[in-house]
Length: 224
Image (cartoon, rainbow, N blue to C red; front, side, top):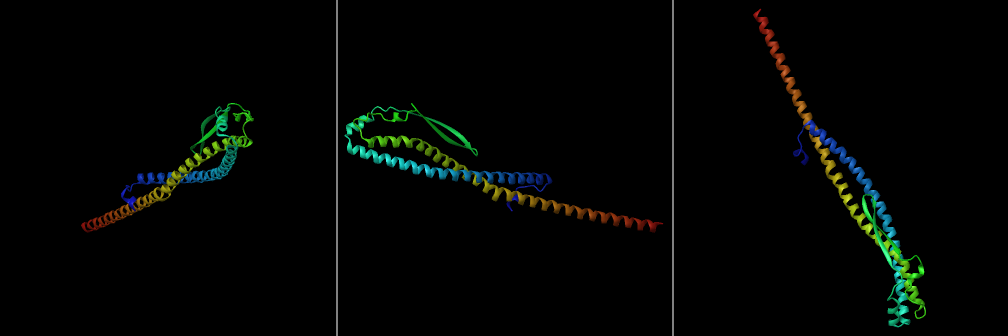
């Protein structure tokens, strides 16, 4: 009943509280719909994140396995020389897109050339097929790694937005709406009480006027 001490029991305040309640109810519905949609899209991203992580980890594990085999069959000088002058370069572009008022990242990359064979910076004469496999696996997993970074950051941002939206929904549902309802109930009760008191006073005044009129009539009749 804390709301009773914070409002004046007037008709203007009653109208204000009713508008406040209507706005809170409408906002509560909109925020609940937003929270539910955010949760749905968040779960889709979580599933995508799991699939991407499995592919990335499998690709890196395969590349590491091939690289270990290549190192076992090649001299360190040959391996180091093979990677001294890379043939390919990658340009990363970062952008954002809006999902339910959340700006999530979008990563795109471009290679210097579109030729898939430009990933090998060495000749094939002194290197093993295992080294080729390691480079190929790492090149193939690059796009999934960027997508994984994009999806993981999107999950973090959407989880934060879901938590903020949940707190707002709870504040409306458990604080603002009940408080406005209690204020309306209190003001209505006080207005009804004042109206009854006014009505009782009017009835008493009426009785007094009737009684006074009756006595006046009696005195007039006695005088005649």
